[in-house]
Length: 236
Image 1 (spheres, rainbow, N blue to C red):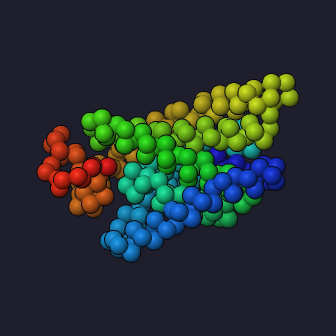
Image 2: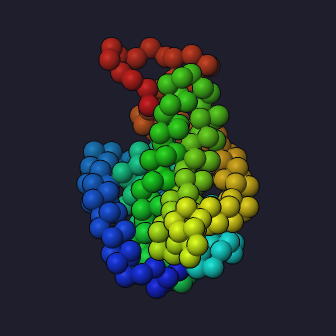
């Protein structure tokens, strides 16, 4: 991630585009509904998209045809849930492909699937499980951002291994090679992204407490205990 322009076989590029499309369409509907019902969230949505754009534009060479970098999708997934990040991530990847030659149009579907679909869902899932188990907010945020980052590269390793199986050991051998090379750069980057996301969340808690409460992020994090909530309300 990002897989370079023209690097995937045409059939793979099309297949990943088809796989990503339903998530992006569903995310667009979720984003439109969020903006219509809560126009005050526009600023925070923009900040989430900018966070993803800036972090994912920092690229370090990793393996031939790809690069390693933070993804920035964990923050937006925690704040607005994964469907919204499918759209914000797609917009980010499209602009980077057109303006920065980072990724590509033919590989857009594959990059969207790994960074804007799987990454946000993995990060949000880890965050929710930890919050429901009583973990502190910032610990859950760190783990969610870490999982969103690392899972993106796990999926990218699968995508590259499917496209370029090892001549001797096939898909398993290629997956081991791609995954091990990515791990050298991506595990430290995932840890760094988790820490940075915690720092940003701390700033948001101080500056946007009302909005975070509406979104459910702060519903169970006041003074280490749950505040009074209407019957049937479940904190996100």
